[in-house]
Each structure stands twice: as structure tokens, then as C-alpha cells.
Image 1 (cartoon, rainbow, N blue to C red):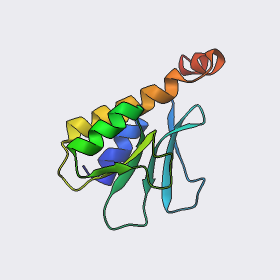
Image 2: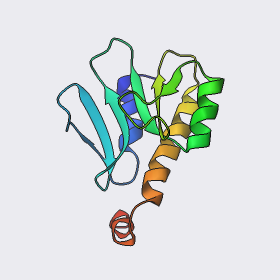
Image 3: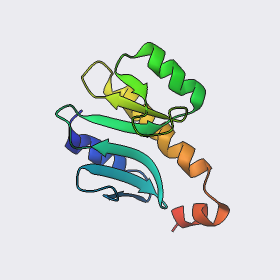
Image 4: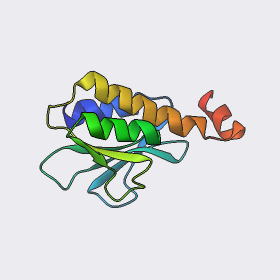
Length: 117
């Protein structure tokens, strides 16, 4: 998956927006000010950090060599995926959807109401 397609996929999520709170070399994708994806741009190899259920995070790491504990993130809840072609785009999109859903599930009622606007 290319960076452009990855960015389009992330921004297609309801109320998703892109920010650069850590500088020009890290794209952060948020929903209602909560981060669900992070893409470092300072590496030749495309990578993405995604939030993950702790048990699923371990399972993905066991199944795919391109999945590692989240770099500079909580290693229990975040994975870093190196987009080297060894994982199908369908699985990556599933992981993106899960990350987004985990964040949305933790929003307050008031924040969830903003998603309906």
C-alpha cells in the first residue's frame, strides 16, 4: 500500500483528521482529538503505528514478521507495522478499522455525539 492510499484510507474514517503535533516528520490521524494511527515519515520504509487489543496485538506479532511492538508507544496497546508487502492490504485495513473502533469505543457520550454531526 502506498502512502497516498494509506492516507486516503485513514481519512475516510468518520471525523478523521490529519495533524502534525510532533513535527513535519510524523503524520498523526485522530478522531475527536484521540489518536488512532501514526505514520513516521523519516524512514525509507513506510511504517504505521496502530492501536490494538492487547491479545490481538500479540497474535499479529506472532503471525507477521512485519508487526512489532509500537515504536515510541505503549507496547501493550500499539503495534508498528512495516509495510514491506508481506501483509495483505485487507489485513492492514482490518487493523486500521480495529484501531479506529477501539478509540471510538472509549469516547465519552458527548464525544460520540459529535460523530453524528
